Structures are given as C-alpha cells and as structure tokens.
Image 1 (cartoon, rainbow, N blue to C red):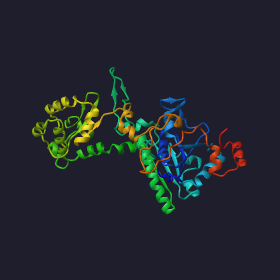
Image 2: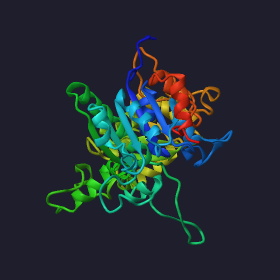
Image 3: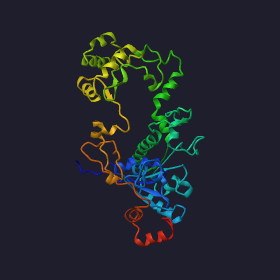
Image 4: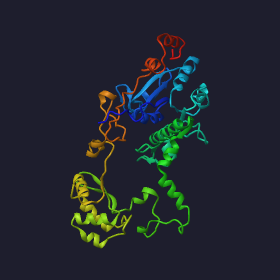
Length: 411
C-alpha cells in the first residue's frame, strides 16, 4: 500500500455541532481532515442520545464523532470566543451543525469570521435550513423523511398509528451532500482566496434523494399525450416510482430454499439467458417480451412458474448461476443479515471495537493502491483542549492557565 498522505491531510475544520448533523465532518475526518469539535463545557449530549448505549456512550456519538478532537470552550466568555477566533485564523472550514445563527449570536458568524480569515468556508447544516416557514421548527431526523414523503404512517392491530421501521435518509444524505459542497467551496477558496457561506437543510437532502418519485408525480401532471408510460407497458402509466414495481414478474423478489432473491431480467437478452440456464426455453418462446424495460407486468401465469423455479435452489446457488450465465440477480438482505454477506465482508470490513468502542463501517470510498487512515475513537468532552491549545494554537502553559482561570474552557 502507498504511504502517501491522506486525501484531506492539511484540511482543518472547526466544528460546532449538536447531535447527528455533525456527521458532515465525519466524512472529512474519515478522509484525513483534522476536525476540531468545539463543545460547550457540558458537552454535546449526542453521547446520551438514541440506542444502543455502549459502555455508557451512544453508538451515535461513537460513529459521528470518530476521528475528531474535542475542545471545550465557553463562548459566552470573551476569552472563549477569542480562542475560537484563533482557531479560525488558520482553518479552512467552519461547520455550524445546529440551528442557523447560533454562532452569529456569539459574534462568530460568517461575516465576523471572514474578517479574520477571508478564505474561510462557513457551512451551516440544520433541519429545515435558513429560510421558509419551518426554519425555526424544532425537529429530529425522522421529521425530514416524513416531510419529504419518504416515510409513511404505520397502523397497528389496535388502530394506533406508529413510526414504521425505515431507512433514515435526510440525516445521512444531508451530511454527505454538505461535505461535497464544502470541498467544492474549499477548492474555489484556495484558487481565488475567497470564502463561501453554504447552508444545507437535511429536509432538502431527503427530498433530493427521492427525486425520482416527486419528479414522476410532477411529470404525470402533464397530459397523457405528452407524458406516458414505458414502451414495454404499451405506454400505459404505471404507479409512480417503486410503487410501479408491485406487479412486476420478470423484475421481482422470489423465495429461494433459504431466503429471497431479487430477479431483474427486464432486458430481453437477460431473460433468454435465464430461461436457457434453467432449461425452460419454452418460457422465453411464449413470453419473449420487449427488448428493454419489460417486467412482464401482471403476468400471473409466468409468475407462478418463476415462483416454483426459484424455490428449487438456495440463494447462493442462484447468485452463482446469475454470475456464470449472465442474468441479473441479487440477494435480499436485512440490516441484521447483511454482515454475513460475502460481498459485504469483502468490501466493508468492520472497524475493531477495541479501537473504536464498537464495530463500525468504514468510509466506503476506496483509493486504489492506498489505505485511508483509520479514524481514532470518538473523543470524550474536552479531551483535546490542552493539546489543541498547544499544538494547533501555539499557546504556552501560562496562556492556557490564564484562559482556564478566566473560564474560557468552562468552570
């Protein structure tokens, strides 16, 4: 493996965050950036939020804050605020991962900080963003997915509504998109000497990630003469997005002997390969389908045939045949079983619990021929206050003691 510096070595990020939005800098830290998490003296209560709690600390904190340094500053004191300004002088990025304006109220907003460092990239990431009627509305992560129409309402056997199991979108997509924007702004700042003020709403990100459904609904508002279904469906409009896959047959989930597989022979060539593989070429001859995007929608006769065929082999056998005979097929895992999948084990080796407090997934981008640095364990509150003051800011022992007595680091 190459011994080259980490991709973001030399990038310094000052983070002021509460809870999950701090994940925006996790991606940067995973790529080698120096992320200094500035916390109030009481700390970010992310350490106590959600479950599981692992030896007294939340999984949320262990993951989101991994690879970061923690310094405590009481920004209500002038001394604490001045330390913050000193940190910004040589930083590339300031991330305000909380309600917009939180730093500005302390005299540390973008307009204040660019006077100190004109190249600074200031990024706010919040729930609903800096504008709109919901901008001050308190919320947690799931609200951005319900707002975006990603998560629906569950109803139990007694008629009570509940939050169904779901994949979280906004709280993950917002930080990823935000990190991309931050890096774009840093590149421009290094070329032009001018910083930027970015703002990201996790709700926006949830809607953006589900663009296919919302844009399909918008397209269907136009007349049938302008917007139709697919040629393989005789141009009949299907239900929007993935809801239109319920009646699919050649593109559907099927039960194997030990689980389920996803069959995806929507292209005619793949469908023929499958029929030849299972010795049922008569199925292809009877229902050859269209060249592309043909799911054999609503063909119950064919669906019964396929249901019986797939029940004859294990998931592993079907995956092997798909690979060998060239037809699309995939495993159907759960969040619990995915760790046993050989593709997962090859691509996403767990970070060790001894080094990180718990097993965690690594950053999923691979630099070929290189090995990304493994981030350190998430910090305790203020764990790096003194090292940051000495190694980053160059304060001597006397200055640090003076700041401590003034309450800059908290009482």
